Length: 500
Image 1 (cartoon, rainbow, N blue to C red):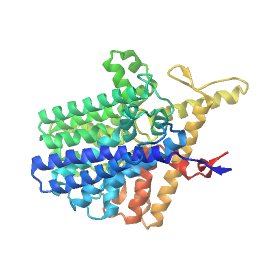
Image 2 (tube, rainbow, N blue to C red):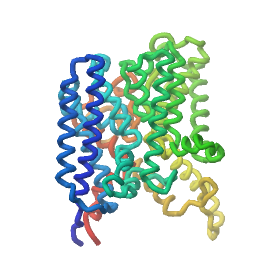
Image 3 (cartoon, helix red, strand yellow):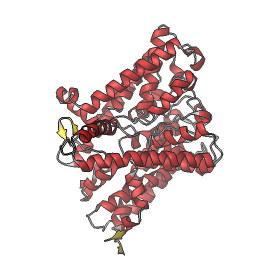
Image 4 (cartoon, rainbow, N blue to C red):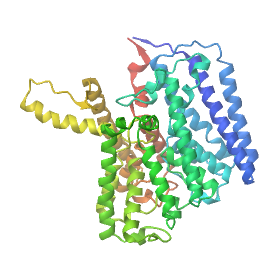
């Protein structure tokens, strides 16, 4: 076996392209800084210029690259592209001294790009507006995938993007809206952008300032969870309309964006008959009913919330906080309206459990994804039938179509690998002296890109107290969770780097 030959030029050319995107968004943050006169415009401008210059150098020095990209190069570009974006994304924090320590800055940036929403900032409201906007932008860029954004313009460079799409979205199915993957990416981004604009307008009409509205919209549609307030969305507990608007868009962000496209095309039947959407909706409805019932009859809601949670009555408040927190955890958004760890021990375990659920495939949420759970459940029930009728061919069906055994095996392998990663993740945290509840919470939250964890790192706390090694381990778990395990972990296998 001999080592494979990689097309290094196309890999570094792509890194240069990603840095151009990053630098451009940093300059946009500098513009926001200038508008709000927060005193860090020059620093943000310099971070953008430095990033752009490195990006231009990367593209120019590799302009004579081969146009072909194989699957291995696709995985390398996606994984290391994410790391390159995160490394360059630390510059606004370091240049403005908002987060002077590199480890903390990298953690915050990786948390942003992976849409995890875990933060080390103790006083968010003291951070300059331009930096807060950059922080929210990292969510928005990462939400639909840096790579999906980039492949929308790859035809201009003469590069096909199918290999990258396979690495970026390795779920069990890839619904195509259009035969060309770049056109698919453009349509998804148009919907994503449209939802962001719509939520910004609605939140502003409901009473948020424009700055708060646009930041929360960027972080809702990306299912990220960064907020401009120390209390997160609990800051608006006395304004239920604002929280209901965020609830609606969290639900949409956790839904397959392909279904949104079908809805705009008037193909409502495709949504009604989609099995994953129906199960996603049922999960949200049933879990909300359970949580609302328990906190209404068993929990002191006032003790776990901020300001005045009973604006429209106790029953409505119980329902709203239950729905908000269930959606926030299922979609891995991570916004907070209350400290759910105070809602009885049962609900602490309950919310820990739904951290493993995740939203729909094709959404911006993290986690295992509803469709994988659906296939696992169906396959589990069919095993009983196969036991009784060993000679019968009983395929797993999804949306009335038989799923190949390869896809079922892939989902089983993913689930096993996900649970192993969670166990190893928790063990590493425990080796750092972190208590059991906090260790399992950190592992589940980081791997699922949820944000709030349990114990010392629960909904009303942040990750500042985590040791530096713990922050790097969290960052690694966030990365493999966001890229759905295989994309990153395959790089650690010896056969990936060899030719047969």
